[in-house]
Image (spheres, helix red, strand yellow):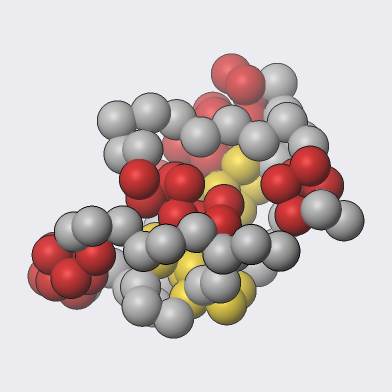
Length: 99
């Protein structure tokens, strides 16, 4: 799989992310409400809220799958970072990952 280049403002993004102090925080049902709503509105079997630090994708909330974190190495995450003003919807993850 081809890895996308890092976003131009990656250092600034990471600084702001760490200022929020949300990584590795406890479960919060308010976030689950958002992922449930997103899955319903988008008519999908899964939705998630995750934050990307320098080495991983950390899931704050998951609907339809169970993950705590994954290694930050795929191009899907870079596309999500590069398009902050949009919602990223992936209809078939196999298309993105090549599996």
